[in-house]
Image 1 (spheres, rainbow, N blue to C red):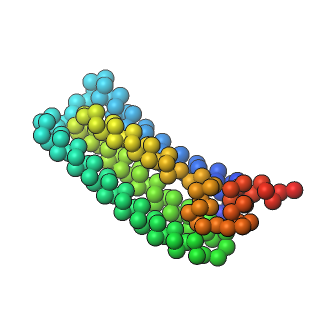
Image 2 (cartoon, rainbow, N blue to C red; image 1 turned 135 degrees about the vertical axis):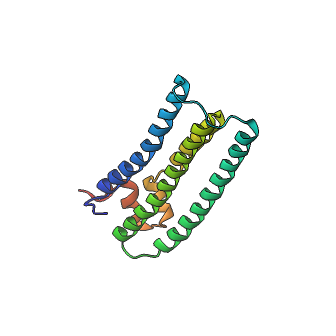
Image 3 (cartoon, rainbow, N blue to C red; image 1 turned 90 degrees about the vertical axis):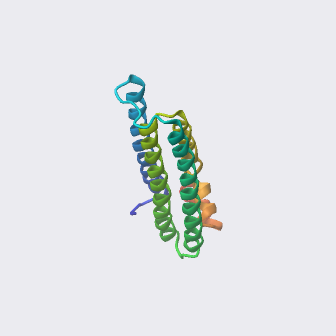
Length: 166
């Protein structure tokens, strides 16, 4: 990712993250609206199938999030060893893309579950995914902690370069 300042880097990073948040929210809200207005009805209505899907979705989501968390942790350990702040931030952007695309995919998966069953637990799961999304948001302090930045690099990232402007 080409950027001329840390402000621009975080601006682009936040825009990419927001776009990956708005897509599943728009899809879920559309399905929710169509469901409430009666334009679509759930395809699966047997209670035992809905319960099976509800618990299966939850298990699959937890497994996927755990795997992604472990993969990202390994990558961040490796990226912390790279020389140069620009290189570290470029690699961090790729890690954030993986994390946010995974959450986007899981959110769309939950929207499909809500479409098929119409069960309110899928709305709760979706809300949990949105909360998880914001807990994973790449703030400057989180970036510097995850990349294990020290000294001037840490100060530059936390202040987005404002500490070194005259």
